[in-house]
Image (tube, rainbow, N blue to C red; front, side, top):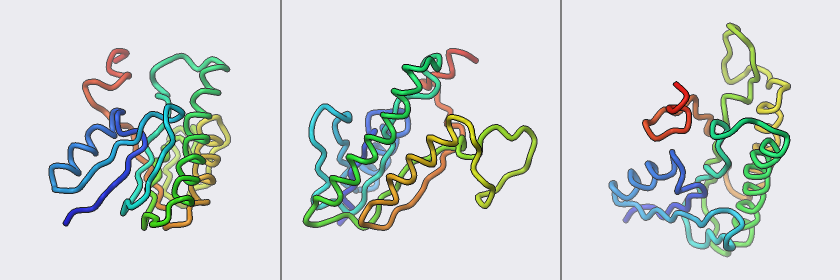
Length: 159
């Protein structure tokens, strides 16, 4: 019997591929509704994957869009952790997306996972986002995807 995995951000670039891959191997992938459109429930899931968040490549970073990017990650992660806390049968793990932006702009400096976080917008956001995930009453796991490239990605129109 496969795993039952709830995915926040399951309709996004990475999420749609994850849903497809999980189903192809026989797991049940439950794409949660967009944040704020319906309550989230993760009852009875084995794992939760959080990929939710507004695209950092889709629009110019106006103050309003930076606030949207921040809220879409921090508030959605908070809601997801609250859903995990509310579940009678809790998932064993929360895999929470992060970003290479955690390290900030460092030019040619060689970095590994032990490097200190940066101090720019994305670095500060990554720290807030990860702090929310750490509140989960299950094993949190940070996934720091690098640059994700797909033909349908927002950045392709700018290349």
